[in-house]
Amino acid sequence: MSRCKSCGAEITWAVTQQGRVMPLDAAKVLVAIPTGRFVDNGSGQLTPQVEVRQASLTHFATCPHAQQHRKPRQAGVDRDPRVPARGSDSRR
Ligand SMILES: [Zn+2]
Image (cartoon, rainbow, N blue to C red; front, side, top):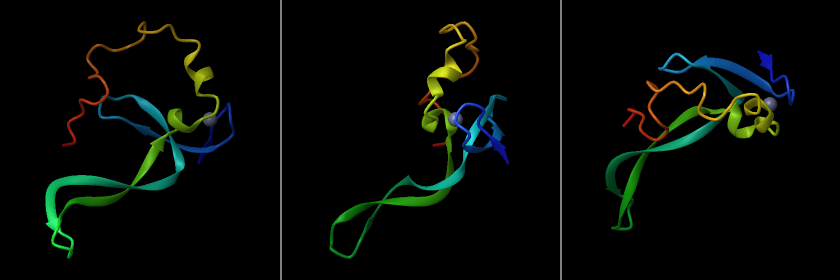
């Protein structure tokens, strides 16, 4: 277990599929991922079906000092053009 150098929160480290190291909150959250299917929930109405999974939040999203993490970098300078933009991941 590691701690964030700026806020002291417990974090773990992980590597993305693009090979980037990123800090994650140690605490897990439950997320509901749509399966794309709809089921009758008993009331006769079709309701979206979800798969519930345990997941980690990126610490950049929850760190109160996240701006400090980003400050030394110039916008766009260190961005790897091979890494797809957010929202275009291939998990679906
Ligand atoms: Zn932090």
